[in-house]
Each structure stands twice: as structure tokens, then as C-alpha cells.
Amino acid sequence: MPDEELRPAALRSRKKKYLVSALVIVALLAGGGAAIGSVTGRQDAGQQQRKEALPPGTDTVKRQDLSSSTQVDGTLGYAKERKINGAATGTLTWLPDTGSTVERDGALYEVDGRKVRLMYGGKPMYRALKQGDEGDDVKQLKENLRALGYGAALAVDEEFTAGTTDAVKRWQKDHGLKQTGTAGPDQLSFQPGAVRINKKHAAVGDQVSPGRPLLTTTGSAREVQIKLDVSQAGLAKVGTKATVNLPGGGTAQGKVASVDRTVTEEGSDPQNKTPKITARITFEDPGKATAFDQSPVTVDVVGEVRKDVLTVPVTALLALPGGGFGIQVVEGGKAHDVPVQLGMFGQGRVEITGGGLKPGRKVGVPKE
Image (cartoon, rainbow, N blue to C red; front, side, top):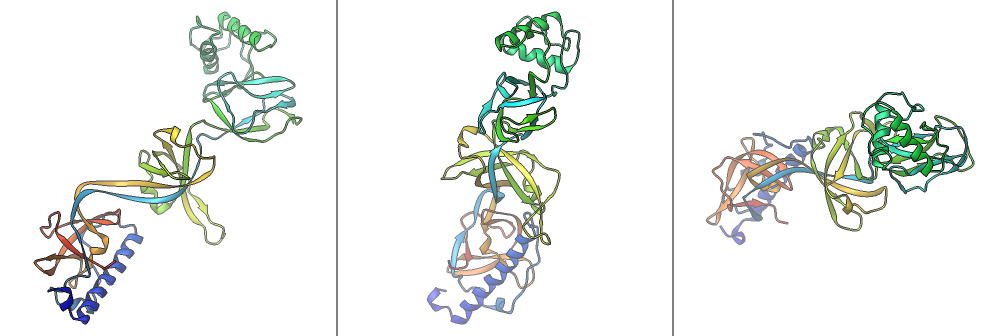
């Protein structure tokens, strides 16, 4: 029946039916219903209108890949935050600039005019290494000496040999140090890799001593930190793909690299804090993340993906009089309700099964 022949009462009844369905859908989504089977819908007296009444608007059934996703706020920063403590006693005579990057053999700080230099390694520099010593820290030292060209003939093992002593002396000579052949925390600091200076905890002229915090560093790679409600934790599994919307336009692709296992409480009201988890996203192409440190960003986190499924707009769903959900199929100038089962919600659409539906079929939706 053409639209102009519909009675006003029928139109009002049909619109009310869509409104009831929308309220039920909102309730389902608020409850985290990302993959819902057959669901019992609400009924309403207004659903008893003539079945052939045409809807206010139409859309189509589509076959597509559907993904559940959420958009959250994040902060662009740097990965692997660490603190560097002093290892010598004296007066602090130099610190690197905030934001600068220090690589292998670069100076991290200076005490009484003597620089402490960065070497790569996971084990901290906790003792003075000398000939005859053994251990993982000796192996780290030898790896660095070889990488810097001071020990091409050195075997990369855990023994501090006479050859290691000679290599250390050559390194000390090049840096204007006394050639003792012994290397200690007053000369070297082991860190996992190149570091970026994030914060200074002391100033030139301060008295320093072993264990006093001097710097906070990060890795040189960019990352985004996001905080999710605990109820959304399933969306932030390690490896989950994400799109970062950068300040000033443009996007960068990444994935969830880590998720904290500790829940924190967020919010300014002490009586009404929200439990959150922190996840970190790294970039496929770090060169695209060129915005300032601590820039706010938004992140689209992609959850589960359903391949090649039938979908309709979420607004097409109707609460059927007998319970459950259906859609209004439009064909031949008439409309009829078809029960369906619901699957994943995402991208403003919902996966449906049942009813013998095919792609391209017209379905009723509220008028925009």
C-alpha cells in the first residue's frame, strides 16, 4: 500500500513499535551484548497494527565482515618507562636534555666531571667488573665491547679474561679515563636499549649518591596508553588490532602489546571511582606517530570479527508481539515481520540468521 494511503494511526503505531525496539536494543548494548542468540523482546499494544503497513524508511540486508569495536581516549607517549639512579658519590656536573635520546656508549649523566655511559643489557651494573669475574654482567660487557669495536677477538661468554681487560683499557683510553682495565657502576650503566630522557629528578650542582633517582627514561618507540572499563577488558587482548586517530588528522595502525593485570580506580570523586585497566598499543609503522609527547588521541579497538555474515541496521530490529526480535521485510508494495536470531553487534549493524533472508532484501527502518 502506498505511503500516502496509510492512515495516521497506523503510522503512529508503527513508529511506536520501532521506538520500543530501540529502547530494548540500547538496554542490550549497555549490558555488553556483543554476541546474543535468540532474545526475548518487549511487547507493546501499538504492535497490533496492520502487518502490511509500509515502514517510514528502508535499508537492505547485506553480507559482510562484521567486527565489534569500541572507541576510547588515549595518550600518545613512549614505551618502557624506567628510572635511572645514581651510582657514584659527588657533585652532579651534567645531565642530558629532556627529550633527547641516548644510545650505546652515550653519556647518561656526569659526576665530578666523569661521565657514566650507557651500555645495552638486561642485568644491572651492580659491581666493579675485573679480570677473573664471571657472570651474565660480564657477558653483557663483552657484547658491548665487541659492538663498539674494542673486542673483535673476544669470545662472548661469562668469563672476564685478559683479553677483556685489554678491551676495557682501550675503551677507557678513548674516553680519557684512567686505564685500569676494570669497569664499574661509576663508568657504565646497563639498560635494555637506547633510552629517551623523559624527566630529570636532579639538577646540575646537586650532591648525588648511589641509589638517588636522577632520570626517568623511556624507550625510543612510541606507544599509546588507553584505559578501559573492566567490563571492556575482553576488547583489549594482546594482539588485538587498533586504529589510532592522530592529532591534526590522519591515522596509524597498531595492536595491543600489553595489558596491565592490576585494576586502578579513576575519577575525581573519591566516592565514585570507576575501575579501569591500562592497555598499551604499539604501531606497525612508528614513523607515522609524530605528534608531541602526551598528545591526546582516540583509538578504535577492534574486537571479534565475523566473516561473511548477513547484517541489517540495528535500527531495523523490532520487538515482536510473541517475544524475540524480528525485522520488517518490504516487498511487492507490502511489508511483513520476519523473526530473526541476533549475533554480533558492530558498526551500527547486527548479525542476523533465520527467516530465509538474502542480501539485497529491503527491510524497514525508522525515518531519518
